Length: 218
Image (cartoon, rainbow, N blue to C red; front, side, top):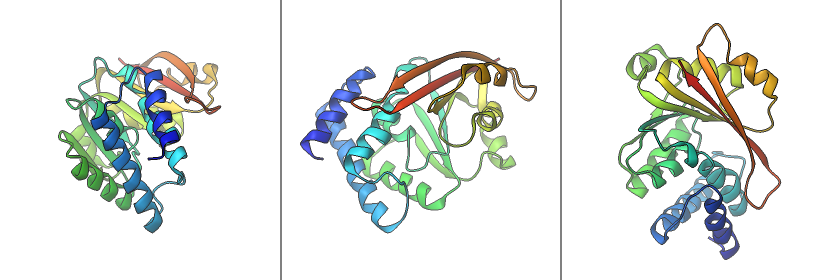
């Protein structure tokens, strides 16, 4: 990883209360190199440059870290090339994580990275959360369900709901949001959520605005 991008990752991580020691940095460096290599053969992500991967994938994933303190099990829906689930696992080794994506090539890449990094307690599943078999197997198993651009918010609220334990947290990673729309969505008939809050943020050393939305099932 180029020196400038290493500095961006290490200093940017501190914004979210994350200290990257040398071992974890080397894991991120390997992840980055493998993602760049695989992207030359297949389209895993439209974000291709080293700096963009550090900023829009790694640091964006780390923005979830401050909300994991009471979380033991996490489901990442539409995890793509492994974000945010794999970076979170790298930082929280005891966190049990399940990744699910409908694109076989992306799940193959996730499994490749999991093997290369020697991660335990993380599974990459090929499928859709709408699948009845998946729902029967994983329903009400998770303390948190997270997604980064998997769908529109309304769809995510509906599809994520049955996977959460009672009192579990649904966390949506979005761009700009309308707080009035969020409040109304939490009252949908299909689900029972308590809207907690919106956390607006900018990705470190950039003008990229993000929003983290938290809903509690109950």
